[in-house]
Image (cartoon, rainbow, N blue to C red; front, side, top):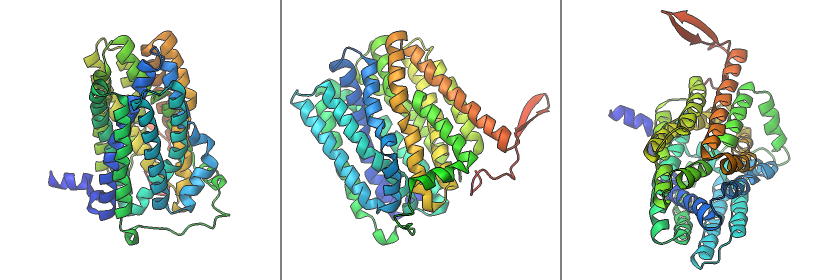
Length: 429
């Protein structure tokens, strides 16, 4: 048991990763508290249960990932990641403070939320690729997959804790206080970034500025059918499947007719599954091919099942399964792409990855919100379920085309195998 525990959390043996993780968990809790409060005030206070408005907020918040892609990946590869993260995290805290003050003083309007969401999206566009690729400077290459999985565990543990706290605070003291708490939480991650042992960071030589072009990242991906397949899967899941603020808020308000605390609890229930999926991923030495297919197939199936649940409790149970599936796929995809990519272009490839993962939201969120408004939340959930099924089909097609996937009958049961000698990546998955 002790050996299994040590294997799962082995990245925490390093001082720098341990310090980074301790600050990140506090900040992540605050971030999830704000997301919960933001969705709630848009749906119930600034509109009359308008899911399309929630979709617009999501579109504005994630759209800059695509719009700023030409510079965000370059910045992650060209600048000192630690200093870049200090700037982005401080900016995000300032934005949370501004929205919190407007809300506390009763001045907030829907267009304010739109503006703050867009500004946050612009800052996050620089923050995300730097943060994802910064992990490679905190741990050895052998522990990179584990560190990615533990990052996901932290993020989803915060998703489990933050919304539950936010739901209680919204009901008792209001959304504005939640935004202010999130602003304060950024002090933790800023402190951790300043406490790192800089001489122990695993810096790599940077390419000359004129050579560090985003086009190099696209050209690199163009030669990699494995990464292209993963990016298409990520696009399908991210665009139509990961619209949980819409799914959960509309089911809470218009189907089950419960309040803010129950809304927060549903998000936390899904996060229990996400934490489980992330911890299971952390135990594996490296990402596995099978989990990309299994994660997406399970995601589509579980989301379809959740659309049929007759009551609040059963809906929450199926959300746990959705969380396990989504996190299994997400962690495997991130780890696979990072390990498969040459260090010299990793920042740009991760920027493209994140732009695909979150940049589809401006397309999918308004569509899913419109479906929820006109055909009901259960139909919107089915849209996400179909995305999971199509993503599974994409990876299955890749295995057939590039890995010679075969099916044989053994003892009356189908048995699948594929050619292990064909490397998917520089380091075999």
